[in-house]
Length: 500
Image (cartoon, rainbow, N blue to C red; front, side, top):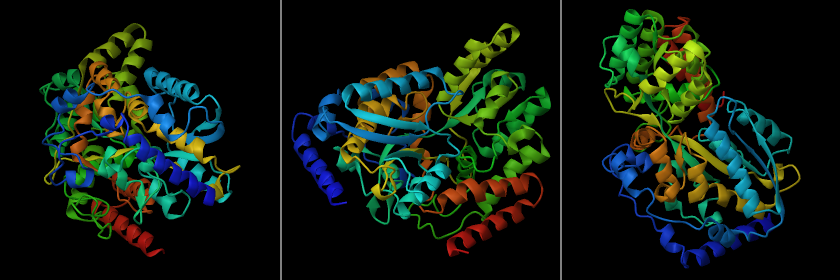
């Protein structure tokens, strides 16, 4: 560990030398001062972080990636890296796959003498696989995890202390809400790679068919329930792509915005200064959000009956077939539908092309308390050398993390579905290209001010992937009433916190 500390110190010295040079101007990004209730959590101000502002700053700065990397770890460094992450799948848009290939080709070009052993793992199983590897001291040197997972492993001592400064970046280069997700007990253990918020996607053609204004989405969650019913009653199609699968991140990412909008939550994560000690999952707000889902699934039957086992991927087939009107998703949904339409034939091709032409994006609906969305994304963590298979090559780790979290590749890797974790990325030529070529990207990006991070506690994974979906399943299957399901969830959180 002494060797590790020496390397980290050297990285901090390199950073100071680097920022005193010509590249310091590029690092000195001046973003609007962030104010407001929800921006206290994320650092993003809805009054200034608008589509117009996002477009106005894109392409205003240039960056020399090679020079920045060389200042951290020399480009001729020879070493070895092992890495786990969730990469593109068969369902990913082709551009996502192409950008992933370009990422690895670029890293090999910058660091031709670092060999990489990498594993692209499933989104819903990566955390479990890392848990198993950690127990057997067979972990990778670096792991990239969804924003929900990191604190659990940091609290167990399975990550190294490590932060932006160790790869040449300032903490201010990242959203405060993102930095919270790599921080535990006052110490930092990783670097944000990307941050994302989702939007409401709807088929304007189905809206028109149902007698709704095709260009106007539901303004509130109550109205979304009404729209879903009207669409189903008048067209026979499903109104809303409800997702309630257990042990799948898709579920809390789509349910929690409703809970927060109604004034609920899991804990007090929606408050300006959360303590994560107060349980909100059984308050009136959360119950109202569960009731809204019950109304769509049980009372109105306006959502797919397969919602209990669906993720967003399962919603894509009925959406491209013009049988589903509304979903919550990323800007990548448009690229995915373009891909699907390009592969369709005959009558299916005509329908799919019509769906793509009718796709619209808008802000998530409001509730009585607020408009809200999950402040999501991913973070990259260097694993504690004690549990790494074969030991850690820290300079190779630093080179890779600097590369993947810098302005260029934190922007490019987020190409169709997210936003650069490094705020400098918003000023790059690549961000400008994204805004010019990815339809509705500025809409989802401008949802960032309404983001709320998941509770930054080790139990967050169990709450969001287990307790929250179980609560929904209990209510939607009528195993319990809405009140009983929420109270049962509260008792489970209490038990989790008490260690029972």
